[in-house]
Length: 513
Ligand code: XMP
Image 1 (cartoon, rainbow, N blue to C red):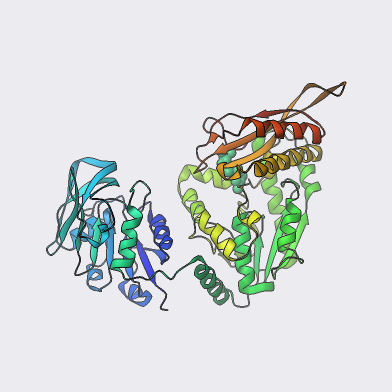
Image 2: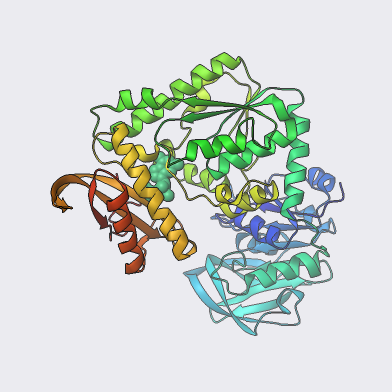
C-alpha cells in the first residue's frame, strides 16, 4: 500500500483521536494505535511519520507505558507530544524531572523559528500546557527549540534524525498556531504530499468492508439520523443487497420524516439494499397510553424498539454482522463513567444482546461528527439528511410533556415544522445549535374569533452549543419568533399560546421533557 499514512501511538492521552483528526485535516490519512504496536507491524504499515500522544503517567513509573527504543532508529520521523516528548527524552538519555508546580493552561512560548516545526509561527505564540514533569536536559545531539518562563524545554529536536518533540499540545485549539506546527511536521519533516481526502476514506472503507464481509449477511438499524444513514450507505455501496436496513417508525418522528427516510433508502431511492419500514405507531401509542413520567416513557420507547427490531431480525434469520453508526465521540462518552448514562438511553441501546449475529461492524468509529457529514456528502446522501439536527432516539415522545397521544404528536409535529421552516426562511439556521418545538401539558384560556378557547401551549426551544453538555438559549430575532407564534396559532389546531424557553443548560437540559 503506498497510501501516505501517519500513525499516532497512544500512550493514554485524552487527545489521541484529536491528533489523528488534525493530521487528516492536513489531507494525510492518520490512524491511532496502542503504544504496544510492534516494530514489525509498524514496518509493515510503512508510515511516513509517527506521533506519540500525551498521557497521564510519569516516565519513571514502574508501569508507565513505554515503547521499544529501537523505534527511534527506524528512520521514520517522530513527533512526541507532552508525555510523548518526555518519553523520547528519557529513552534517549535526556533528563525528566518533576516540577514543584504544574504548568497548566494557555502559555506564552518562545520558539526558534529556524526549526522546521516553527517556521510559520510567531516568535512568541500561545500554546496549551498541561504537565507536572518537565524535561530538564535534552538527550545528546538534540537542540532546544522552544522555552517558556517556567519550562526550560518546551520543544526540542534532532533534525538530522527527524525526531521532534513538544511539551505542549499542538493538537488542541488553545494552541493558537498548533495546526501550522502539525502541518509542518507532516509536510516538511515527514515529506507527505497530502493526497488523502474524504473520498479516499470512503473508497478505502468500502473496499475493506467488502473484504471483511465477503458474502455474509448484514443487518442495520436505520434511524434516519446522519450516523446510521452514512453507515448504511457505506455498507450498501460495499455489499448491496446483502444488507438489510430496518427502519422502525415509532410514530414519534418529526413531520414527514418517516417518508423522507423511505424516499432515500426505500426501493425508489438510489441505493441497493433491502429496506424494511416497520410502521409501529399504534403499538407505541398503546404502550405509552397513560404514562407521564419522562424516564418511564424513555424506557418503554427503548424496550418497544428492541421488541420490534427483534421480531424483524427473527424474520430475516441469523445474520453475520450487525452495523452500528457509532462515531468517535460516542466511544469517548461511553468510556467516561457518568456520560455513559447519556448513552444508555441512546437510539439502539441494548440491541446487540437481542439479535443473533457474529460481529458488530462500526465503519465510522474513528470519525468525528463533521467528518461523518463530509463522508455522507461524498457518498451522495442529500444535504438535508446530512445536516440534520441531532434528534433523540425516543423522539417526540420526550418533547411532549405528560401523556403521549396521536393528537399531541400531530400538534408538536406541525408546530415544529413551522418553526423549522421559519428559521430556514430567516436564514439563521446556521447560527443555531438545536431548535425545535415541544408541547407543554398546560392548557389555558384564550380567545379566537369571538370564541373562548381552552387549548395547549407550545414551547419553542433553541440553544447554541458546541458540545451539547452546556448550552445557552439562542437570541432569535423577535420578529421571527412572532411570525412563528402567529403561524402556529393560526395553523395548528389545539394550540392557543406559544412560549419561548429562555433556560440555559445547566440548569435546564436541551430537550424539553
Ligand atoms: P439533553 O436534553 O440531555 O440533550 O441536554 C443533549 C443532547 O442529547 C440529545 N439527546 C438524545 N440523543 N438519544 C439520543 O440519541 C436520547 O435518548 C437523547 N436524549 C437527548 C439531545 O437532543 C441533545 O442534542
